[in-house]
Length: 130
Image (tube, rainbow, N blue to C red):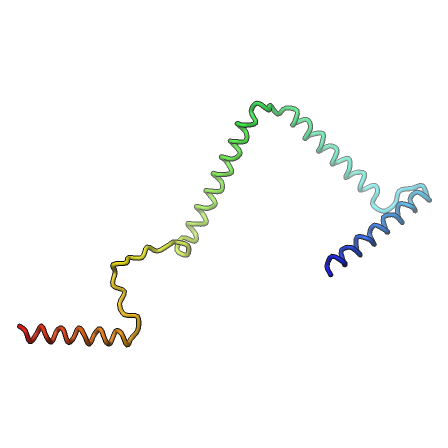
């Protein structure tokens, strides 16, 4: 459905563009944002000329050095961002080391009662044996 709506909108805009262009040709003058488009085209052309000028100064023998510098700086910035994020969220993302030898206690109250009962029996036996 979304594709159909986008198709209809683009078709309507295309028809509008052809109608406006035919009116411009018929009346012999520019209409509808043509002047703004021309100024925007001139601005894009200036930018492209600047890019071409700076690109002519690129020494291709140093591309490997430049690319390694860019990769190193990106790596440093990613590590810095990660460290800041880890510092702020360390209590949430920190993995706890579980001690397998630590007695965790009983799982339920029933088992706790049973273990307490067994301990009391052992203590009574030890008390009788002494």
